[in-house]
Image 1: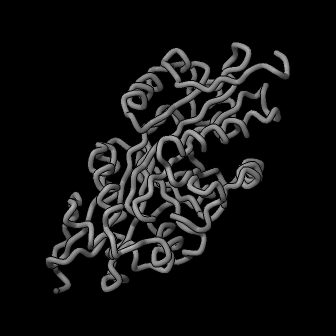
Image 2: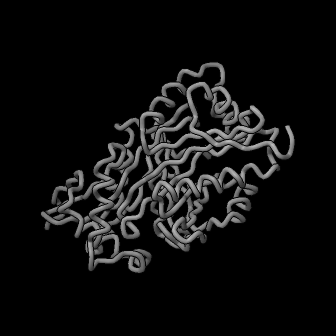
Image 3: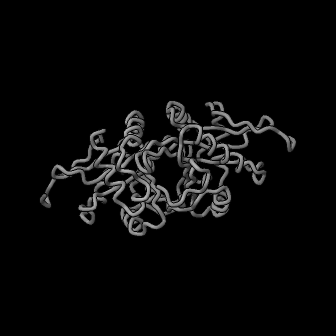
Length: 163
Length: 163
């Protein structure tokens, strides 16, 4: 891989699942939440994502390797004079490719794609413990104007650092 | 209206738009963002919401009056072993009905509905200036575990206290 290797960002297919789930798991928070030994629940979830025209799950490839992923969701709404929001979730850069500016390219791509898809506003939440990520998003022009609240609907208790 | 008036929460129709937009505008942040003199952009947005099976825009009625609204969005995802998230947006309680426990009923309803619709996790963001809302969500069992970032895709600048 050279410095000039081209980055391609494209829609994810089911064949990308092992690489995506590998990146989701290779993370201090993800390590406790993901299960790599059985991809069945991920295949079920992938079918739900793939069947919803407002979901845009993508992978980034460089020199034949999967180096990143994110999911963009378009949410039409009434507030702010009928604004459509784009929500970015599950942003991951492969451990071997961190610090290479790839995260910046991914998020800039997502903002541009959101705009093309008609979004007026792009939003995301980041775990309060991810202080590096917060600096990263602020540098990219995001305003840290909100608090993000989570509730674990599976067990009825407040979710402990999920998402 | 008596203390025992029944609360009904139902899917919003286009006929509910004036009442919903009125509630969105009757708010310190909403007052600067909404335009009540022309509902056209809201009608366009309503058609987008109504046509998306993963959007659940509802109104709460009591004694023949519209007293609240919220929008629930189902977002399938891969992370957390293929969890589906429900996002709550645009929660409003009519000014005449605040402090009556209605907000609690609305959010409890939304969590229960999200669970019925298959969500494992319910999440929302709240503007950092809405400290009363933060206490409210924490009391209902939500964990304030995240920071929420926004980016204004319309003008390319970080959004100033939107959403």
